[in-house]
Image (tube, rainbow over all chains, first blue to last red; front, side, top):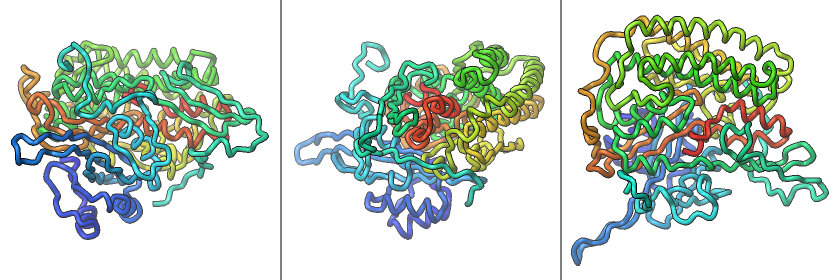
Length: 164
Length: 397
């Protein structure tokens, strides 16, 4: 399946240098936020993943504890980054970051200029903040917009099905 | 990898305008959002020193409809018509891009006949999309391609023939809703191939005429040669794909490099130019149109017999359920890598995605403006903008 790292070189890079242990079948591997920039740099400079792909942020709202004594689930954010190698046999390297609410993600702008708008868009729509981004403004929504529309708990106020 | 390409002078997009020469006669010009050359609604704030641009700040988002949010409540089978409207010049590609991602996650196989049909539809759509670009580029350049809207009308005449072909198959001229998870909805009618041969013959002949316009018309060459140079390093770093990347000398095309549909059964010859300027991007698109027509001609007589979808026509929208997993699938659209990132396991007991993200090649292309525009004049802005071939429905989504 696409989204899982196929390239052996990427797998060994992740396992040996970036302490990635789990490679799930149905999702890209999770990487610690501390390794994020170094991983992107290694992929770009050593493995020639030089074409900037995408940034996807997703919101995982917290859940309160069901019973007394149990602990609930804390609100979290997940980021998926993709880079592509060019030319014949072009491959894709995708990895994920997991962030607690309020935690800032390291920005990739210093390595890839394309991360500027992509991270701005994710900040605008999902509300993830990026550390080291030179110009973190809203991209799609008006500057005075309140809230982050692509969060799971952001309501769509409409009487129309199926969005009701 | 080294690229044989022109190196552009790249401007600093984060320039603090208050540090610019104090005695300069600066003027702020708002290009757009309602400007015919912005191909929709797009605003660029230009800081001008005399006639030369010092800093450019683009403001996208005027056409933001929140498609990704809407899709979180729609089921996988209900999504295709709404995705059609993203890149409204190539609806076929949009449908294919999302359905490829859903098929990957769902694990449904596409029959060989449907793969062939998808390839043929995609290539015809690429020609139709590039024809609109050529026509509007002619208008942008104020008649440099033969007086006002002449070329525009000619290109739309050719495009109409392709839309007629699609109408014969799907019943719709434009927003087809013909792809679904696991195959296609509409089979091609009898004797459709004959019509396709006629159309690609006519268009191929006329593309030869347009190419002469592009390479030997002095006005066109003056307006485009050496203007708006995007070099390979900048394009890769920004994630720019498609004809813009290939015009910068990078030999990269997903149809050949990461084949999908039936592209592994045809020989795709990738058009590459090295100058990286507006003229190079124009030439790459002309060559691509010719190549697309050749691929269609090669495939249309060899469409295999068999079913066009993996299962019976969808009866209930809850039929496709993906409870967990996430993934990304992409194809080479007319504007570059059009991809979909899906996180499965959302509402409707798994029949809707938890999160859907569309990687839009136009948004990446637009992000080059702050780097490229400084140093150019306002008239060059129009030429550069037109040569990027943006579709605002896809930039803003």
